Image (cartoon, rainbow, N blue to C red; front, side, top):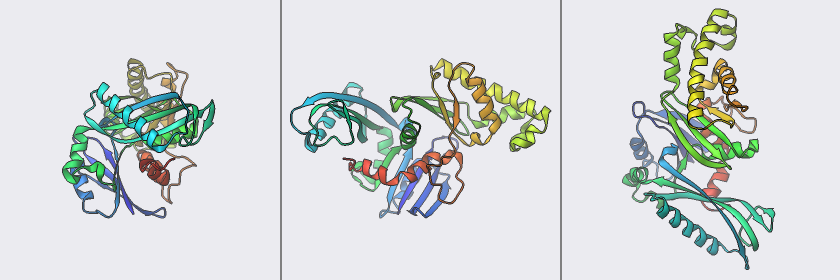
Amino acid sequence: MHYLRYEYLSESYPRCNVFKLRDQSEILNYTLHEDISSVIKQSLEYPKYDHFFLLDESRFNFFRTDFFQYFEEEITIQQLNTLIKEKIIQIKNEHAIEGEVITNYIDTIYVEGEEKKFLIGQKGQIFFRLYIIYMCKTSINRFNAVYGNVLDNKRIHLIPQSLYTLMFLRNTLKKENFTLLYITESYCKAITVKNGFYAGFDVLNLGISSLKQMYKDNGVVQYWHKEYQTIEANPLAKSLVVETLEFYSQLFCKWFNEKNLIWTDIIVISPITKNEHFIETFDKEYRKISNNYIIPFHHSSLLNSFGKEREPENMDSLVFINQEEKIKKMLLGESE
C-alpha cells in the first residue's frame, strides 16, 4: 500500500489531495485542508507505507545535459555513476544550487548512430541525455524536520507534480515541445517543455477566482455552472459569457506574448476545462497570435480511471497512478 499526496500551493488556501492505494482496484481519495508541514507530519503516522509527494515545481531546479563521447570498453554501472556524480557536482557549483538531487535519469541513447534502449554494456561512439532534478534547500528542510535526512528514507519519494504528465504527453503525443498550463483557483502557472524536459516556469495571478469575478462584474454569474447547451440556447447569455471569456483569454495571450510562450501548443490542466465555451474562446484568441492549439487535458483513453470519473485537476495524480511501476523503477534506479 502507498499514499500519494498532491500539493496545491497556496498561502491563503493550503490543501493536499490524498490518494490511498492498496492496489489498482482499491483507491481512496480525500482532501486535507492543511499546509505542507502538517501533511508531512501526518505521513509519519504510517511508517510502513510508501509515501509519494507530488510537489509544486517551484520547489525544484531542473537540468538536462547531453553526453557525446567515445568509450573503448563497455560502459559499467560504476563508470556511469561516476559520470553522473561528477556532472551533479559540476552543475551544483556552477549554478550555486542550495539543495539536493532527488532523482536523475537517462534517455535518448544512441550507439554509433543507432538508437538503443539500454546504456550499460554499450561501447563505441555514444550519445545520451542525462536529466537531473534538485530540490530546494528550504523544501528539503521541511521534510528533514520530520524525517531526519529524508533522502535516506526509502519510503519517502519527492517528485515534481507534473513530471510524469510531461513524460506521458511527450511519449503519447510524440511532441518534444509544448506548454503545460495549470489554472488553479487563485493563480496559474505555465511550464515550458522543450526537447522533452523543463525549460521554464512562470506564474501569473490570474486564476479561476479572477474569471468568477469577471462573470459577477458582467452580470452573468448565474451562468457560471450552467451547461453548454443551456447557454447556447440563450443568445444574450451566450454573448455576455463569450465576451467575458474573450477578455479573460486576451489577458492570457498578452502574458504568453510578453513571456515569449507562444508558438507552441498549450495543454490546459484545470477544473476550468469543463467550461467548453472557455476552451473554444481561448483557442480562438490564441490562434490570432499563433498557429498552435489550446488542448484541454482531462481524459485519455490510455489512462485507467479505476471506475470513477476523475476531476480534470487530478490528471497529474491519475497519470502517476497509471505509471506506478515505471515510476518505482526509475526512482529506485532500476531502469537499466
